[in-house]
Length: 233
Image 1: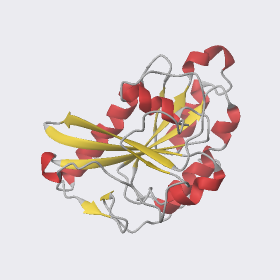
Image 2 (image 1 turned 90 degrees about the vertical axis):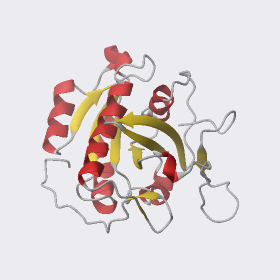
Image 3 (image 1 turned 120 degrees about the vertical axis):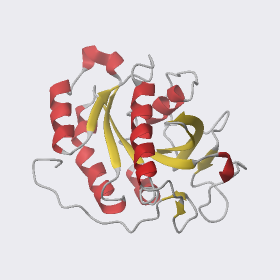
């Protein structure tokens, strides 16, 4: 959900990148922050993940749609609970052909934003598949929130608020509706998951770890979570 033309964000990973899959990070000293938090965004292509991230970063909304190629990310520095925190926010591609690439980013993340489009019921129906990936590859207690995006298209709503909220409750997630176009609830969504992740990190001692690819995070062995039929699919 991001055009390959124009200004890049802090980093980008895509199939045209020469050599092995690598991510280049800005030269930020780890000592500049109390700790780093890794947040990833998942969901079908076209649900507005990139636009949500651009909105949170204070960038201009654009009507045009170009799919993210692989994985893109932004960094944002914040003060949360009196701690200097570096937020790494990863925008993943929604297409099936990139699923193997994007699932590798689940394992060390602190929080996951699961995004669907309230005006497209199919993106809500496909949440089961995304949550299955989360159960397979992320920490079993990873912090998650369900995002119903594009509420500015309320006249075309196909997923009632009550339906999405009940789904989120059954799956143990919070639920919030947003609009990247109007910035409605965007900061609230990101700030809420960052706040919970920060609190958890403080409770766990604030220690940083790196996974096998060198990405800052927990690096914990993943464990699949059993699920009931009818809860999350």
